Length: 445
Ligand code: 9MR
Image (cartoon, rainbow, N blue to C red; front, side, top):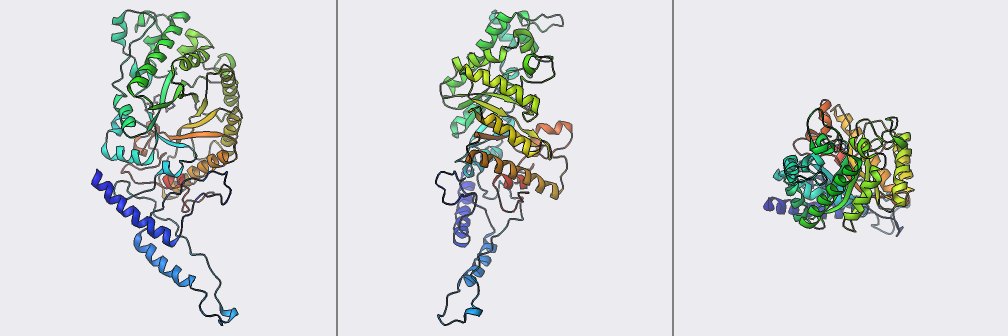
């Protein structure tokens, strides 16, 4: 692993020197405005041979001042060296040096990856993650159904305090600690991926089980949050920087108060409409002071949902128990419009809370070259929007996380083959990757 890395770094330095000599650095610089953040320029690897050829031309074109008595009419106009525009997007992340997304965006927000344990422990994927991301989310391994231990809970014999196990996520937290990657804790209170028995008297999993009382459920919730936070924060201090305290509690039209999800939420049905406030109250009580507490949801750009989320988070903000809103952002190629999407970020930004794009992917269901470029454009425009919103102070976007490393591993494949992410199955970069890096080869429109 290491020798390969050193070799790549050697190649990288050569490219870097050639690029600096020939083209200078280009990128998202805002010129001389000292207050404006500028993403660290991603190095755009070029084939050393091609660059050399272009460099020679540049040298000839630049030689325009020879001879003071040169005829003015025939003096060639100074021309900018033509910039090489990327046409080969499929670079093997295993064999070639590619720019780092988190380095590129480090003055703006962290760049995160949602990953499963199995993928993370693959050497190539692990190395790529270290190179590209400085934030991680466990795809499934920190959800209640992964942490709750029913047998141990039943044996412990208390109605109010579950017993947890952390073997699902231990290695992932350790990986983050070893490689200086920060973790988004996902997720504490969610109607989905929380076993039914957790809501029942006696932790029963029988058909005729009955709900535990509100009082019991409040204690179970508080103890669950406390136990997760205590374990993670003492075993892996400093690793988790943000918690998705409550996930997907809003579903306008589902019958709950103030647009809350009710029909499939046992949290709502056992505790009542204040379960979200209570979850944030407990989370604040047990979180480390520097950890940020988030409300996280999907389709946040739908207007009824956006309004309900704003009402909810503003109430919790008044109580001092929330720091941010997570916009999952599982989006399509044309829906939502970027106008609606941006409008939502602006509205959320007005709350003064942090915004994190927590689960970004683009549901592309075709795999033509043309569509891959269009997908790259959509990624580029999204990041262009994020950058603009941060630059203008409209929203404090602190993280952008993509929901999966390769198309192959995406959750979206459950509905048929999808191509929503930045790398293909053989760990080559897709146009989408270069879009995130604002590469000139990807059209912005
Ligand atoms: O990526 C997760 C997938 O592997 C699981 O099968 C699925 C089950 O609910 O959850 C996926 O992650 C979800 C995330 O935790 C919350 N937002 C929606 C994500 C995609 O379903």
